[in-house]
Image 1: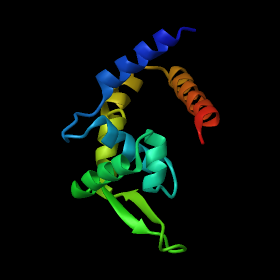
Image 2: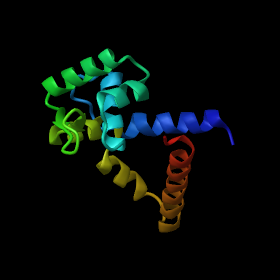
Image 3: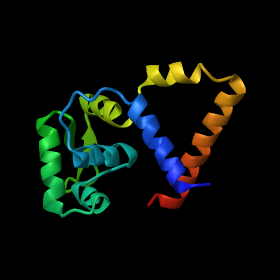
Length: 138
């Protein structure tokens, strides 16, 4: 199987099925928000490691996302020295529009397939997701 073919198909899917982006976000903003969404107990230090940037740079990204109302800081209840960053409800919605496929477009596309074909598509994505998490999760 060709890696190039999978990449081309993936980018076609995202290009054709993404939500309309209405917000002005940088790629790093989106990556920060994804890291917050996909991990538990995220700190600025954790973000700096995930994004491979300095602590200061990660902190600046978070400051801008807080100003936009997409992220908030919360002190740990167990250790008041630890500060976690979490997505706000608007942050969750913005992240969805900037990283997921448009559900209406996707549903319209899936309806063109038989039940068996839909199951194969779902099984394939489930397998890819499971293995990616197994191989690349911290």
